[in-house]
Image (cartoon, rainbow, N blue to C red; front, side, top):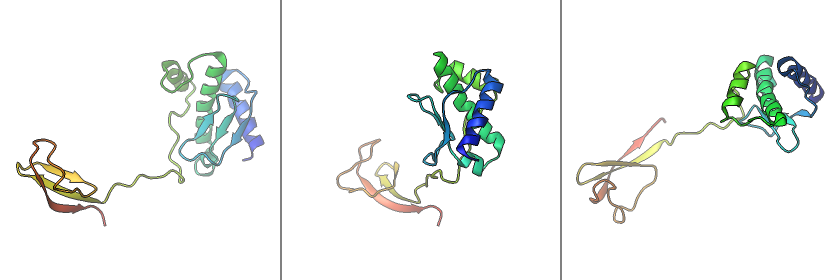
Length: 157
C-alpha cells in the first residue's frame, strides 16, 4: 500500500464513520516501532506504522486509522482528544476503533534478569539482588542486622 492509497483509505473512513472530511495528510512512518500510529498536533497529520498492514490484516489497519481519526476530529472540534479523557474513550467505542495496537515484530521485548544474588540477615530476612553488594557497607532494610551472601539463583538457561 502506498501513501496515496493510505490517504484515500483515511478519507473514506473519516467520511463513513465521522461524517466529516479528513483534509490533512496521512503517511506511513517507518520510524514508529511500538505504536500503530500517531496524530501530530502541530500539523494535524496522521502517521501510520507500515507494519500494521505488512504483519496484520486490513481490519487492524482500519482500527488504528479510526483511533487516530478520533484524536484528529476531537482536536479539530476543540473536544477532549487525549487517551485519558472519557469523551475520547466513548467516541472510540462508538466507532469500534482499536484501543491498543497489536505488538509488532520490531517492538523490543523486555528481558527478565536471569541471575539473582541472595543475601540473608541474622534475623532470617532474605534480600534478592541483581547486583552484588559490599556486605560490610550494607545492612538489612527491615531490621538493620548485618547481611551475608547465602546463595545465587539462576533462572532459565
